[in-house]
Image (cartoon, rainbow, N blue to C red; front, side):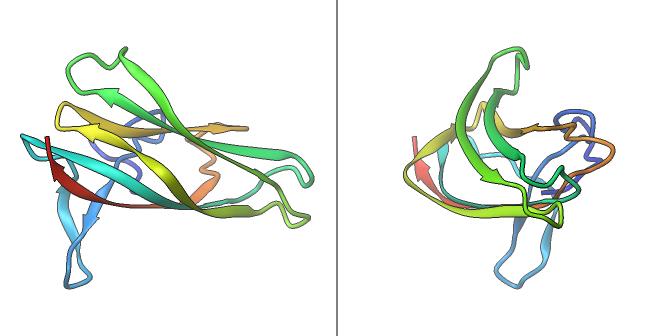
Length: 132
């Protein structure tokens, strides 16, 4: 996850970059290649600066690239915020979700905002590409 990406999601302009086999980050944001689908299987996230004892929810949304009004929630991770105001989770999705080359992954956060002040310190997503 990166923030401040050109045309990124939400106020923080969140988007994702691919981690390359040599450990470097790709120069551009990640988009699913044509005629492929991305199957997301795992997600790790950390939340900072929340009210202790309350609930934080990370919502993963698939958004159409051509029409941003077309978006659907595909996954939620709910956790209790600790006494230090931080929390997080490592999620393994039994069935996962699929993102086509005509869409991208966006995030919503409750309590938000996703933008300033940034309450998420990291989101790592793992999955694999498959033929459409």
